[in-house]
Image 1 (cartoon, rainbow, N blue to C red):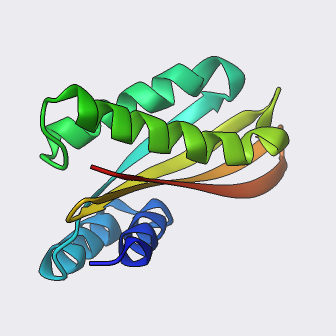
Image 2 (cartoon, rainbow, N blue to C red; image 1 turned 90 degrees about the vertical axis):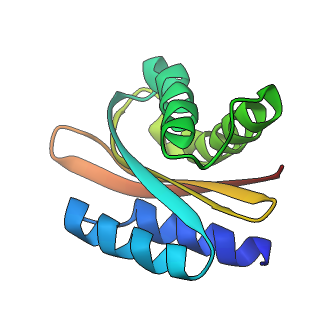
Amino acid sequence: MESRDVAKAAICIAMTSSREEEMKLKQSHKEEGIQSLAVDYGGEFLSSLQKVVERAVVASKREGIIDDSSHSDGAVAGATREALSQIMPKALGLNVGGKVGIARGGTHIAVSIFFGIGLLHRNDVAIGLGHRAI
């Protein structure tokens, strides 16, 4: 399993537009030996950084992608913060909405953030990606 495969899975599941599409993709990833999940998120970017990281860690534990160790928590939190830092220049001071996609294959874990960014009806789109090895 290569890190690129896991990163691609995280990006793809973050870009799904419905729960049904998410579930189908999750099953397809499972057949390839990759565990994946997606978490919806929306709100003001700056005040929600900690919440996004917390949701990513909690969802990863709930879905069995990581165990209950501090190493696993740190890997997901670090990858999530890396992904957030990549979209920060566009999102500071604005509202965001979209999905956080998480995938794990072997020792690789990837977190992708796919957000619409905007104020009122003016929206931009950004994607960030972080990777860690466990």
